[in-house]
Length: 332
Image (tube, rainbow, N blue to C red; front, side):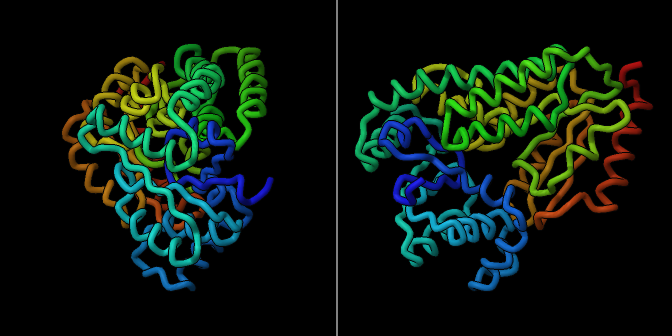
């Protein structure tokens, strides 16, 4: 792949526009967390002067852009991490072309429509071309949607294997056809299984964990994750036009927009409790206060920092939480 064909993204954006422009979206988050040594990318940022209190995801994004030589990056300047603004300034200082995109906080239709039009114009395409791409991509997105139903409706899958496919929907690994084939193979594999019984059904809320084996430690002894909030949102679960789907995409619009979706899914999926993952030094950790006050199921809040494995303290807290849910009733 030629470097000038790649456009890095720091968060989910209308990738239809990027494909319509003849470029290839690259989710830098995935480059970071799947790197052979993701901690080295964090260290790269710190060595280049990022403060110690900077979120490790931001440091990892910077390190991945520098290490992989990405020359154009879309920065979500509204509706994502507040530190993205400063990251974009540093990347511009390093010679990276920065392309801004902002979700309107109030979900205003006209402003979102204008952002999508401006984004398309900046990349040399138009919304009509992007809408044609969306029709194609929505057919691809139907496959992770089917996997999600195999997870929570038919009880044939694990939360980890489904969320990994959902994560890739942010950029389709740059190749929607290959992604569709991969997801189709996973569907066939899971459909061939017998349903599994779960004593406890959990949801995991918040940003995708930087802790690489978190789900491995949760999904044990009759416990299964049947809802990964943000990963599911990456698949754009609400169909429609670009404007309609990206307005329904909850992550950029604050905790109250997310809570409507969370509460609906907790009820539908018969969830016994949720784990709220928060990242150290991230403003979204404050939203835990609102989330706890609204949800009617027990909440365990876990905080991660560096890209690493589950700590002993996390293991103890997860085991205590799931044991409590089993004693409270669970499923025989």
